[in-house]
Length: 110
Image (cartoon, rainbow, N blue to C red; front, side):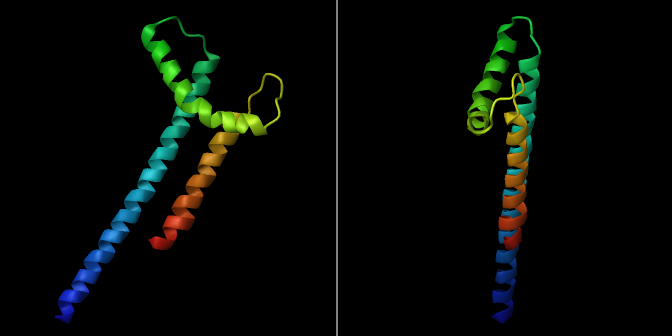
C-alpha cells in the first residue's frame, strides 16, 4: 500500500512540474510573440507601403494590438521630438516581467 501512495505522489509531482513548465513556456512564447508584433509595428510605421487591403488590415491589426500597450509608456515618457522611446521601454518591460514571472515566481514551484 505504501508503494502505491508513493508512486501516486511521484505522478502528482510530475504533473505539477509539467504544468509549471507548460506555464513557463506559454509566458515565454507570449512575451516573444508580443515583442515580435511590436517590432513589426515599428517597421510598418516607418515604411510607407502601397495601398493594399491586405497590407492595410495588417497595419491596422498591429496598431490595435500594440498601441494600447505602448500608450502606457507614452504617458510616462517625455516626448523627445520625433523619437518615440515607448517601444524600447515597452520591450524592456516585457523582458523584465517575463524574467520575473518565469524565473522568480514559477521557478520556485519548479
